[in-house]
Image 1 (cartoon, rainbow, N blue to C red):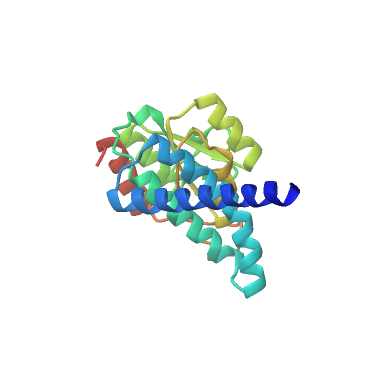
Image 2: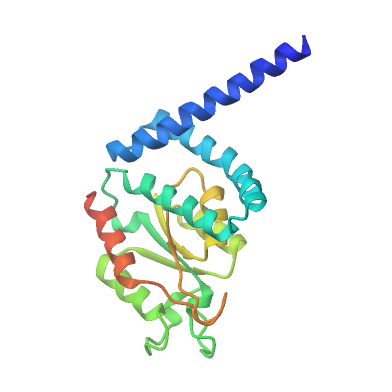
Length: 211
């Protein structure tokens, strides 16, 4: 009896993953989302991600590479959402390591403390905020990022961070679409990082126009 239950269980898991993989391929191909398929996609990606990390470790694929793939698939799915968002419903969430480490005007709790000297890209974030009316927040970590999301209640998030933080953030915030932009780290992790401004602006325009 136990063996039969076990076989049925694994058949069910196999069927679920098959539908989930089909949902991913279908959504990417059609470039539009479906609420029912999104449920399968979310659970399939969540369930398969830790398994892929284990397999990757065994066969020698770097964790960072798998995280990048996870973010790329997530971005494809979020990009397929054909919906116009009001600028006030879009939150740009940035890590504090984008701020110049020598700056004495901390922007973690209020980005308007920035003096716009141009030594770091906080100035670029403020320019985009002024130009499009989107909301901007700078967080020191996952706990503060979750609080910001809870307080602001955005309908879509564009997050800038490293592969590890983006992956965990995307998995944490399941009810809100999160588009991930991987930051640049020429000085090592968490120190004077930067991001591609043009890519960020392009994503903002896409979500505002619904294109």
